Image (cartoon, helix red, strand yellow):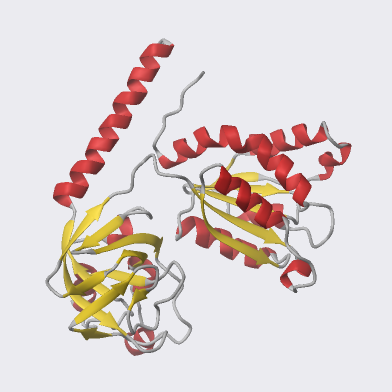
Amino acid sequence: MRSADEKVLVRNHYRERRRKMAEHNSREDMRGVVRSVCTSPAKGTEKRPVESGHFIAGFGIENDAHAGKWHRQVSLLSWDKVEAFNKKGALVRDGDFGENLLVEGIDFKNLPVGTVLKVGTVTLRMTQIGKECHTGCAIRQRVGDCIMPREGVFAEVLTEGDVRAGDEMEVILPDPERPFTAAVITLSDKGAKGERKDESGPAAAQMLADAGYEVVETLLLPDDPELLKTELCRLADRRRVDLVLTSGGTGFSLRDQTPEATLAVADRNAPGIAEYMRMRSAQITDRAILSRGVSVIRKGTLIVNLPGSPKAVKESLGFILGPLDHGLKILRGSAGECAR
C-alpha cells in the first residue's frame, strides 16, 4: 500500500502528464484550415458562403441570423465529414447544413466543451456539441439526412476580427483546472406561469458563483417530468456541464416527479450526496425525511436534486459544496480516486 507522500507524487505525476499532453496536442497536432465562411438571413435555412465574416465578441458573425447574446453564436462543422457525406451521392454545398464555419482537418465533435479555437485575431470557445434538428430542416427535406445534429458544434465569440477561407485554425484544449460549469433548474408550476417569483434558483446560482463555478444556464420549468428529462439530457450530453442542480418537485405531491425524471436519465447512482443532505437537514427539521431528492451521474455530469424552498436550498447546497469539488474533478479526469 502506498504511503500518503507516494500517493501525492503519483497524483502530481499524472496531472503533469495530462497537462503536457494537452499542451502538445494544442500546439502541434490540432490545427485546421477554414474552407468556407457562411451566413444566412433567417434561422432554419441553408447558409451561403461569403468572402469573409466579421466576428463580434459576445454576439457572433455580423449579419448572420444565429448571432445574438446566447451560447450558440457560431456553428462549426468538419469539412472532412461533409466530404464523406457527399461520397454517398448527397451533393451538399458549403453552408447547406447551416454551419458558419466549414473547417478541414479538425474533428470538432471529439473535442471537449470549453475548447478554444483561434483564427487570426478571432477567438472562439466551444459551448455545445450537436443539437436537435429543426422541424423543417431544409437539408433534411432535400437529401433525407442532416449531419449537423451529430457532427456540428457551437461556440461563443471571445475576441473580434475577420475570418475568410484559407485561414488557419488552432485548437487549444481547455485547462483541466478550469472552473467547473453548472446549470440550475427550478421546477415550479406557479413559477413557470409567472404566478410566483423564483427565489430558489437564483439562491443556488449565487452560491455556485460565489464558490467559483461558471453558471452557464438557469431555467424555470413547470413540474413536467418529460420536459425535465429533455433538459437534463441536453445539459449533460450537449453542453457537457459539470454539475446540474434542480430545485423543487421532490415532495409527496402527485406533481412532484423530479426524482423519477432524474433517475430515468441516469447512467449511475451517486446516493451518498442526497443521503448526506437529508441526514444534515434532519438535524434542523424532522420533515427532512420527507424529501425524495436523488443524486446521479449522466456521462460526465453530476445531477443533484435540491428541495424547493430558498432556505432549504441554501442549507442543503451549503452541506455539499465542499466535498463536491473532489468528486467533480474525478468526473472531469483532473483528479484520481484516493483514500485520505
